[in-house]
Image (cartoon, rainbow, N blue to C red):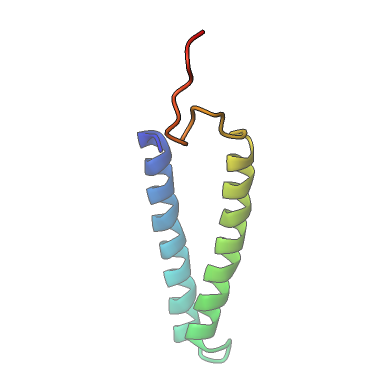
Length: 78
């Protein structure tokens, strides 16, 4: 994983944590809405589902591994 991709993932995790925390705080301040834990878990689940789709779509473009990519086998020279 490149440094840029790792930085994007770290920033995405921080933003998701901030959003989930904000939702839990708002629901905690207004208990009539719902239980804070339930709303936080639902928000986290929705964001995780979207993130899983994005990661799956990104890794689908990588293509299959060739005989010398990731298997430890060395391609012989003719």
